[in-house]
Length: 335
Ligand SMILES: [Zn+2]
Image (cartoon, rainbow, N blue to C red; front, side, top):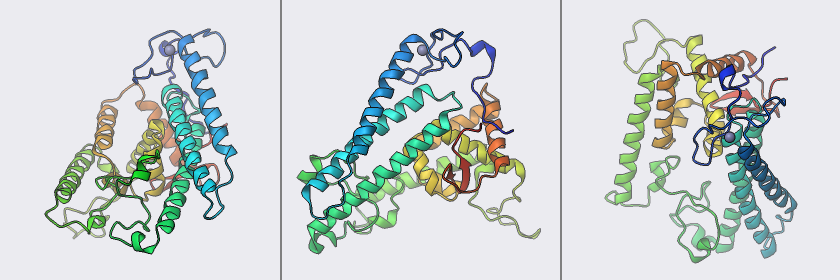
């Protein structure tokens, strides 16, 4: 039977609290009542966990209670959507915190991540709905401008007075997921174009550094089709070890459980397209992880074990799987 790793597995760490504190450091305290099965936290973190758990449940329930969001041109419905988005974001932030601090070493991590992704996706849909509504209310004169308000992403920092009264965050033009082609309305000597070029160049350099440490991650190149091919952009034929290492990367994204990053990963079909749209800080974190992985950390074994497990499971799309970087991953814990 394939089962995801229970972490940590070595006996010397069993009595130590498995939580991270608010700053992300390991809690050094001892587990409260370690003789009782399932206890993995110290007393302080146990209270903290219960408090956060209760808060996110209350926020999520309040979010679920708002159902009147479809009445066209009804200002109350618009207000309802805004309130629902606000509650959804608060619930997400709390759930992310709970996941990051208390479930990073638990086999229950995946179900939590699945829930977070579901909520994040719903909140994104609500934001899209609200944006379309606002574009319609403004009328064609305003919505058809170069700002492209009828396109998919709300990509501009909205400076209107109404925008300042809401909690919504508009994507910056410098967000790596916004391609340069979307900046077409700016003159070529505008500073924003120069900054965008600079960031894109740097992203490519950092991605290249990652590939130099873990060549298996590079899925952007064409496989070698014949012996004569000497193009340096060609790569050797993919073997099973490369595939497993790619699963290790997926395991890391699930482990990290950053809802924004994961949601992007569910939409990206290749690792390279995902990386090219990642923030440089995040790529540097992947580099740090793989450098440690290459050296062999205490947790290298379970990353590898889970990667092999996911590879062998070969999950088919279903309600309990999520597509991460083009491959279905089981998000329910194995029995
Ligand atoms: Zn603790």
